[in-house]
Length: 193
Image (tube, rainbow, N blue to C red):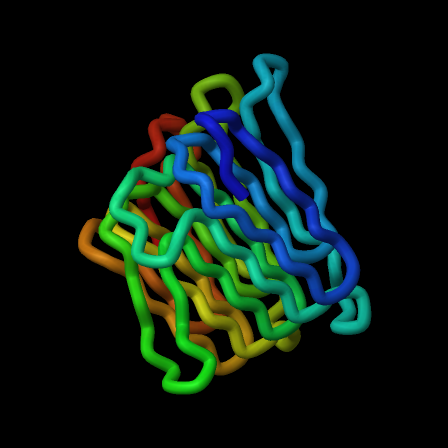
């Protein structure tokens, strides 16, 4: 998933999918490994990303790659929901299949990632964060999530997950959980984890 600065949306849907791209860009990307619903405001800004799978059978073991492994350039803003299955989500990173060695890039991005099923909500028009939460407490997989430098919110979800990130401000939850932002002011300030 990449491009010459163009925003992109990818819903991989049912089955074991591979979503990849090596082009560097500072685009905004919305990627779901399995089935999902995405809602937008009247200006075209994303307000909601909601995974819709409630059964393991409708998902798959997905591999989602954004940017090159070890990238040193910016990769924009990325919203990723892996969904059901044992998913690998790499933003300028990788996990060696044989040695399990983790590689993180030094490029900067802002990432919101859920390894399993979940929801991402933002305000209309101003597009400030409202909530990030996992939704299937007893279903998911053993996910691998690796990002580069920058700001990141990562919710691993169900299963035995590997989570690694570069330098920057980050919040990582190994299992199920959620983050609630200021819904009264709608200013994107984190109020509760």
